[in-house]
Structures are given as structure tokens and as C-alpha cells.
Length: 530
Image (cartoon, rainbow, N blue to C red; front, side, top):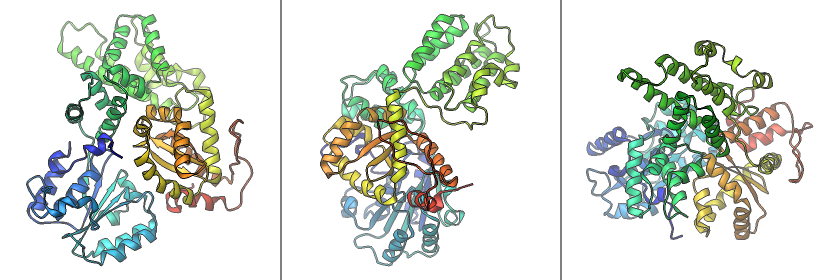
């Protein structure tokens, strides 16, 4: 495949190109300079912050024949053959999480490196290993051969046993700053000759939430079929909201312009703006206004007390959101309370927030808060429910491993560039013999994938002579559905296949050995049934 997506094309090749992790880089460079190479490292932090990229750069640097100030020289024989080097072994623990895989590593580490000074094992998403696999790895980390270096990477450091952590040098990667992401995006757009507005670039950096890989994926997707990328393109495709819209919304409150305020809120709902992002930007605007109220003697906005109360009320809204409540209902009522002429005391509403929304309070009684589900096409919602149900009916570890083994080849040969941009950073998390569930962190990307389900199935099935259907959901939605499945297993409730033209019913009837099925899909150690 000639085309390479941006986050792969601009993946760091030395320490100088690693963005936003200066402290970690400086420690690794000093360890190279002083030739103090540990036998095991663990890199933890949010997705897209450079953990795996840093691991690869470090692996290349410790085997480089002529290391420089920035790590690998990129010229020597070791650097040139790095991608094909049999001594650099990269393992995805999400799909190779059993004790057999770790035992294979243990057997192989006894062999000396074929070409390099060190044999390096990079284990990504190490927290996905089973308990028995961790125990097997522990023995190896205790007394490894001198020629072996382990680099473990994880987005969930809490799930890694303390016995493993205590045997590794730990590096905590943090979210990359907004300015660092903007600078990198500016560099990439210049190199790729992408015509993009400055405010659109800033918005992409903002919604990537500290993940450079997410930012590059968004840029890649928007630029694939646009001669010029504008802020409107970002807002339309990724449920974002511009700073100008936030300023206008706040002006409506201060000027008591209720009709315009209602119109703007209706537009946000129509565009499926992420309510969490809206609240986050409103809080930042409140912070700016609070500072102005203290700095400027003739400040004409809301009082500091009202700004503080508004901030706390908005921040607490997520505690009252669940599947039965439109989040904009609470946001709208909260903001309307601060229009001039309202005599109700904000402090009282903070103490008893349930009084503001009496009807939803009755609806959600005894229901735990969950991520809100945005308004979507009813037919698509129904299709998602049915395919999730039918996938869980017959899901198995073997089916998941089979489709995951085909996925890289599918990605590398997919002729549809637009579809490729959508699925390149998505994951397959569950599968039966006929249905696969795809997840992505971006709600806008999930929507776009679901609009291309027919094309996706056609391309995949034609290539591999299979009969797969797909469905896409967000990472958060997947965690919710997984917990529901586990709860049903606990209660001995089974799933039955539903034709896609019918409405899914509640799972019924007990199945024999159904818990064994759940363990097979998720791994026994990963399921906690209370």
C-alpha cells in the first residue's frame, strides 16, 4: 500500500521527534550516555502520547552502532534493518494474553541476539495479560539474561500487578500540551501541503485531548476529501463547538437574549455536539470571565459569586445524566437560571440540584449513571442493539482472534481511502462467526463508520470470502455493554439470536455453562462478577 496514514508516516524516529515528553526523554538519553541500561521498563499513560513510539526509538538506540545525542544514528546497519530485525519483538498483549505466549518468550530469551547487542521485547497493553501470564513473566523479570530488555506499555497501570511494577523502571507519560500538538500539526500540514484554517487546527488539537495520534488521525480524515479544511468541517464531523459559539452563548446570558440562547442550544443538539465538550468549554469561559471580573473595575458581566455557582452546577451535571435524560435539558435549565431577572438563589440549587429537574428525577430512580446516548437515527440505534445482541450470542475467543489476524491485511489493501481513514485507528473488541464489533474513541468517527457498514462488509467479505457484518460503537459504550453482558452472565440470563428486522427483546432463559462462554470471550481473570 503506497499511502501511509499521517500518524504512522510522522511517527518519531529519534528522541528529538518525540513530542511533549521531555522529562522521560532526558532520563532515557542519560541512561544511554552512561551505559546504564535496565533489564525492564514500563511506560504508562493515556493513548496517543508516544509510549510505543518511545519504546521503539529506545530499542533502536540501545542497539545502534553509532548512537548520537538524539539516540539512534539512523545510518548504521542496525538502524537500517530495525524494522526487519528479528531481535526486536513487538507483542500485542490484547490478543496474545495467555500463559502459552509468555512461555514461548521465556523459551526464546535464552537464545543470544542474532544481529544486535540486545534482544528487546516490547509488550503493548501489558495490563491485558492473564494472571497466569503475569506470573510466568514475573519469573523472567526476576533474573533475565544480560542480553534481554523488556519494555512494557500500558494505558491502565492500575491493572498491572505490583510485583511486576517493582521490577521495572517506571515512566509516566502525560497528555501532550495543546501548544505542542498545534506546533506538530502545523509542521505536518506544511510538509503535506494541507490547506487548513488556523482555528480549525487549534480545534483539532483541543478535541484530541492530549493525544497526538488522535490529532493526526482527525487531520488525516478531514484532509482526505477537502481542498481546504475549516472550523465548520471540524464541528460538523466531530461534534465540536467553536470558541466563538461559546462566547456568543455566554453573551446571550449576560444580555438576557433568551430567544437566541434557545436557538443556539437547539443547534448544538441538532449537530450532536458532545455535551461533555460543551461543559468543558463553558467552564473554561467561566474561568476567563472570573479573572476579568477581578482585573477590570468596569467589568459588566456576571458577579464572581454567580460565575462560581454556575461552574459548580455545570461540573455536577454529569452525575445526573443517564440513558433516559437528554443532557441538554440539564445544561439549558442550569444556564437559564443565570439570566438577569432570575430571583432564585444559585446556592440553594447547588445544595439541592434535584429540584431543578423534577420529572427526570422520577424516571432515573435507582438507575446508575451511565454515559448519555446521543440522539441518532432510530433504525441505526435498533441495528446496533440487534448486532450487539447477536454478537454476544455466539461470540468466542477463536472468532475474535481469526478476524484480528485478517484485519492488518485488510487495512493494508483497502482501496477506499476515506473508509481506511475511518477504521485505521479503530479496534475489534468482540466477534462471532458472523458479526464483529468495532470501537473508536471518537463519537463522530463511530457515526461515520456506521454510515459505511455496507461498503465495509462488501470489501471485507469479497477479499476473504466470508460473511461478516460489522457495527461500530464508542469505547465508553463498549465498556457499558460489556458490563451488562457480565451482569447477565451472573444472573444466568442468556442471549438469543434476533433477525435484524425485529426488535431485540430482553435476554431470557438460563443457558448451561454460560459463564464458561463469558470467560472464553473476555478471559477469566478479566471478569469480576459481584
